[in-house]
Every structure is written in C-alpha cells, then in structure tokens.
Image (cartoon, rainbow, N blue to C red; front, side, top):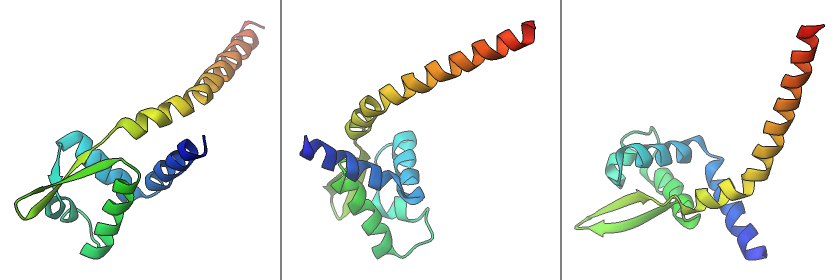
Amino acid sequence: MAEARAGEDRVFAALSSPVRREVLRILRDEGPQSVASLAARFRMARPSFSEQLRVLRDAGLVSERRQGRQRIYRLEPEPLLELADWLGPYERYWRQRLAELGSVLDEMEET
C-alpha cells in the first residue's frame, strides 16, 4: 500500500509542473520525440530540461530509448490510468453534488 502511494505521489509531483504537463501533451498529441525536438520548444537550459524529463521518467510517465546518438521519449499513460482510478470516487461525488444543485435550481425556477 505504501509503495502504491509513493508511486501516486511521484505522479502527482510530476504533474505539478506546467513544463512537464506540456511535455506529456506533446508526446500524447505528436508521438515519440527526441530530446532535442522536445527541448527546442522550451526556453530553458538543456540541463534544466533534462531534469524535467528525469522527473517524468522516475514517475513512469515517459520511457526513453536510444536511437543512434539520440534519446527518444515516449508517453507511458499507465500511471495516469491509476490516477484516474484514484480520482474516480471524487468525480462521482462532484457529479452527485452538481445533480443535487441542479435539482434545487429546478425547484427554485418552478416557484
């Protein structure tokens, strides 16, 4: 159980950065990319960008493979599915609350 929580914590921490979320979006929308291609989209020093990729890799959100002299990064969505499972009860909670609010508003319109 503690191991699963540690994994969730790493994923949440990885998602806390707008840069890392944008890297995930790029990989989702455009497929695997080289480090150079990804880094060119951000205004930051290469070592700083490499640190962003390391955090994503450590969280299991991306994988890396070597292709000649390049490193190619690919989205690994499984940790996001695990978060979706964790977030599911909260989504149901808010849907129920909003449905109740809708009912109250409907009643107010009728009176």
